[in-house]
Length: 461
Image 1 (cartoon, rainbow, N blue to C red):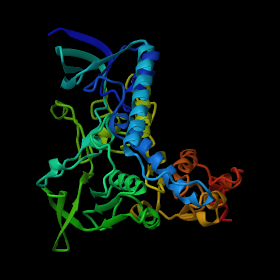
Image 2 (cartoon, rainbow, N blue to C red):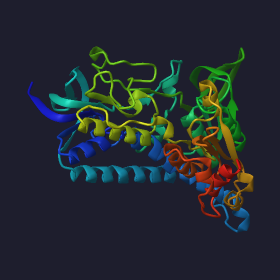
Image 3 (cartoon, rainbow, N blue to C red):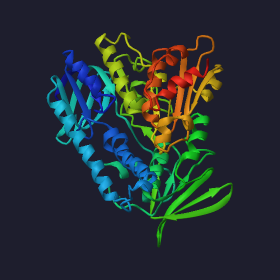
Image 4 (cartoon, rainbow, N blue to C red):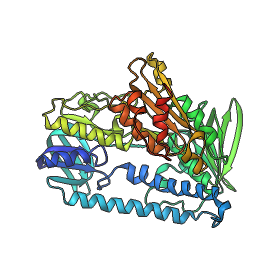
């Protein structure tokens, strides 16, 4: 088998890989990206954040449309979900074409479709449609992403997953009258919000006592009352299995020992995602924990020339976090695997794109409690906010959390109007160590919800 040499090989071509590839290629390095899909993009575009948010924005506008119908903005009737899906597909195809154009104009980068595996710390073998190819590299970036978890229950194959909903040309193009969602993480709750807005009755089965178990309890408790009344959440539900019946499908589950059953034409399994670990990683002696491949803040694994970026390390499974991780890896590769850049995971914002949305960044009260950290809180309520009043979205608010004494911002959250946009400004303040006085002194625009950030800071004085 002939061996070809590159400066850098990436296993994967998504957000944890291609930003590094472009940066390294501009510096003159020869880069090979390998990916089973053979396209420059990750699961975010294929089945995740981009297509789901294309659906979400239509649902958001539809809800607002209903709220203002009394002013002569009459409802056209029911949602044509087939056209919603067509819009989602158009966005995906447009972005695939955009990525292809970017790649075609980039020097020093080769993209190869195939499944890669390690043979040693500097060598990968790729199984392609045309046969097996072998590559040697001074540096390797593992960015193989994550995949949906299929629950080990009878009838799991009857359920749809997020991939089935959000991939190009999905099978579901008609709005179901009812939907059962198994799993109360962000994917399950977001999807429940979209379908409820479109008119579907949704029942969500949560295994534990509350949804969004990894989020701060104050955020969740603020968000849940604001969700659409067509969403029914059943906590402490142990799903026993899924089966076909005359009306479509049925889920059998148990709550506190009592057997339950619910029927629906569509069942969504959204119980989580797991990292995709390339073959040969374990043989190299790289450490793997329950989240994925263990990395330092330099994005290096236990072998300094091997990096692991994005969902495969499980530290913060978000596209924008993967992009920053890829750039950290690129900078450290350019310095000869000697650390010169570090990933700050705590300044990366996270948004749950429900309707309304909830977003957070940095240290929030539940985390502070586990670390033994004292916080000072600044607060602002959206019931006082002009934009929330204009849009008739008065629920939720802003919370900022400061270090006592220095008043340095450590974290914050937003639930309600424009949360997904406001959290970026708060994240910048966390990343740059701004204080309550500096935030309070900034003249945010009126009448926009962002002015609530400076008002929350001013509540300390």
